[in-house]
Length: 121
Image (cartoon, rainbow, N blue to C red; front, top):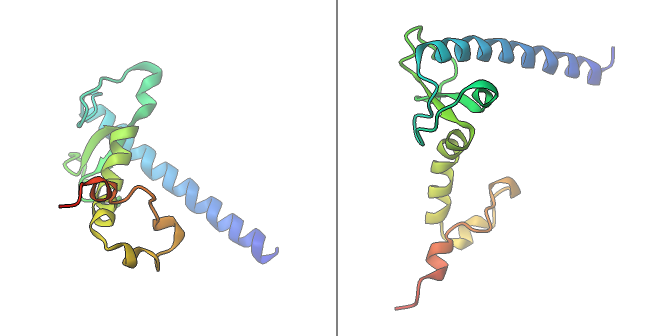
């Protein structure tokens, strides 16, 4: 078996394990909580239920108490916003000269746009 094949096998095994773990706490969360997004309060049922995700309040995916005290159900959009909120806030406070040395994935062309649109005093 080549190194590439070994790597692919390991990655596939890790992904399966992660899916199993996520399915376990997601199913528990769906039994514990009403099918409503904890932020936008949208209701989910039927096929739309797949758009409801489990958010770990402390951002530790290994902290899964059986009472669900570390979970909240969020829709895909609110969950995505929750995980990008701190990143965008940090970007908007940076000096433009600091941003040039960052990797391309951290670049946001609209970061600090509100500062750029303000009228000069």
